[in-house]
Image (cartoon, helix red, strand yellow):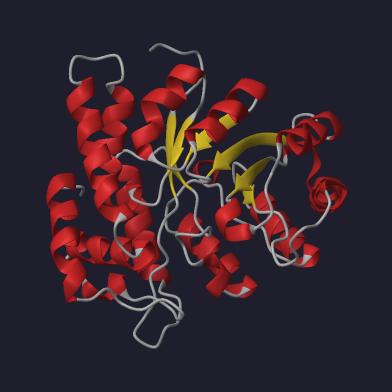
Length: 303
């Protein structure tokens, strides 16, 4: 399964909160550094798993600065920046570009549904042109397709139009639709950009088709196992490595995903504070404890 494309794991790192629900940047840095040490190629903070839409712009900017000041290289960061208001997306994207991040992971505006493709294109164009005017040719956008949450799909014709209008700016796409057929269509249609699956269980198929790897919520818990699978795709242990990551992923798919991921991370760090979530999420209950413990056991030591 050899490929000329670099295969990578980017972790959508959880956002720790203190007991008063304020942002806990110290624990964010601890977890971010631990993920890199466990083998992740980079972090994609402030997306769905990071509870980004429960964070203010100031919190997101401050957290990104804390990660970099805490020793996470900016070229290993693809922070989420997509908001409903273009001005907010521009502010977050410009801030990330100014700090030297590898790129930004950008949702379409997601409040209004049933909008035209011309409208979605105009929304991305507005941000790209504003940030590129300030930061030059180095600005890179990774499109974030998660239609079950956003209600606004990123379609093949839209990607084609964006690439044609802004060559070199559209660097990749994260497909969180959950559909392999969707991911395969993105890879086949746009081999010039990096296409990431949202499930590590899809890595063998993703790589075989010409994709770039994964950006997966459960990689917060199993970064070491997922990296081992990436490194061992052509090796004799491929089947066992794939079975391990698929089993961990399967457990989380039957749980309240974000609270369960945070509870598992808390168990791994031996620090219950990592489990804290902001409303509208609530902590996992006793009914979830067995599956979370099993996921931690299957993942094995991470750091």
